[in-house]
Length: 193
Image 1 (cartoon, rainbow, N blue to C red):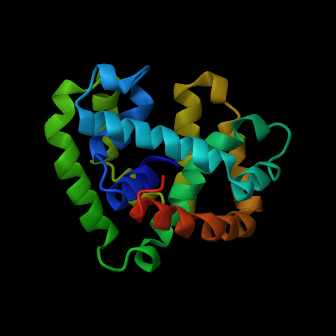
Image 2: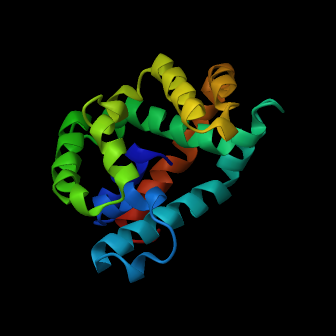
């Protein structure tokens, strides 16, 4: 899961949006450094990552990637799931538009940024202004996302080529999303993540 899915599942679980969005920028035990609600959000984010990576549907999708891109398949898939969530938001979340959800999330997170890691603050400067999560619905935008990630992290340079795997297997990836994401939503609502 990437930014949008983590925020969405956190909202369904009544968990800290700040903690869930910031989790990848926090190392170690969050309970030592963060208020309880934020630490619980960080912990939820980490549980969701482990749970998603272990799903049979997600493991099956990794096998669709070519040998040259298979190493970065988990990172690619995290972004791909956000693509389908953004694309199908209105079918999954009838009570609130995606722009309204994102405005609400931004209004909750932004006032707390001064106390967060600098890299997370830097991310937030672009995340909201450039409307990343809403733009995830645009298939071509994902190529920009993968290229940007590859430029920032040379170890992940294969992400540039993973966009082709995304395009070549689009239907199967979308089908997998519909198989597991509604279950994740139901688990979040029930506090079972």
